[in-house]
Length: 450
Ligand code: F0G
Image 1 (cartoon, protein in one colour):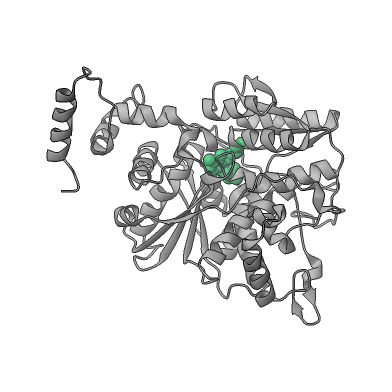
Image 2: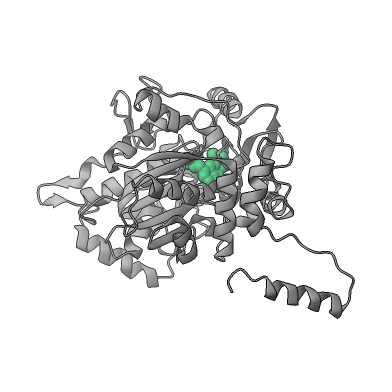
């Protein structure tokens, strides 16, 4: 374990998640990979790793069935592999998105859908790792501040391991779907009268006073597990990396994890070139965008976050330094999108039969801008990381289709014009076949695909 700011080296499995010297974030490093016979993980070279990981795909061993632990050679090792808590996370699909590709202006567009994880978001891949280390460390309690998905995931993994979980969420600012998951999995759930950043501050104090293990993405083991989304993706492309990978940015743990994976896969010789990793934020929660544009990534500019994508309503992202590093290392871009652009992109992804939550849709909206700017070329291959399942936030989707998502905001007219062709409000009819047949005939006449 090494501090990202002062470089101080801490113990592996250390109970603190921050540097004891300067308080900054820690990261897991693998000094043992550099050997006299080249770079190797667990004694295996690139060809050996590829073959072993491939072989495990036909195994019924619980560790091999997990899309995280299948890659355990590049993850921190537990003293006892029986301590692993797994819900068979990972193994998520990669879908081609031809019509979204046409809308964005690229020939080869794919989505890696992390919303297909056991609790419906990418958080599970990190949580299996960090929760396993919590159990190995003998903790009875784990805790997080969350915009919803982390809490749902943490509560599930804690329950599987027989640990108690404490969730701090901003009151009235997370979706019912996510809140109900935390409750069902038995978390002690506190809705604080503040925003996500305020919840983080309170939790930082709580973990100093009580023996609870912090499972936010500042926890370095979370990011190790989340690396595997990128590894799976590269394996799926037969180790020929796409030109671009695009992720939504909130607390910036996920972009940091995916970037770390890309750099490590290059170091191990599994890939020859690096994809450009770009991060997209909502305009109203654009701390990283402002940090890059106004300080060149030197100093964090915090914002008062405001966006309908509650998952990424974060003003002071904890992992900003790690994210800046991977942006610079891979040559990726940062971009921001409006609420209307995000809503349209979400409907387009839905219309491709895929669906995702609002925060994930900023990736497609951002891609459109990156294509217009010439940063992404028409013939380049692009993968969007969709972070959450459509069912996480049905309220947003219903309001969108009923046309009241932007009622009472500053952009109702703009929204009406841009979004109307995508809206499919449910109809209330008399219980008669005639009424339904009429609707069917009208829908056929106005089919936009004709
Ligand atoms: N997409 C979704 C669906 C999320 O839930 C989050 C973060 C992000 C994107 C952003 O990822 O924070 O790693 O940059 N959700 C956290 C939570 C903060 O508490 O569930 P990030």
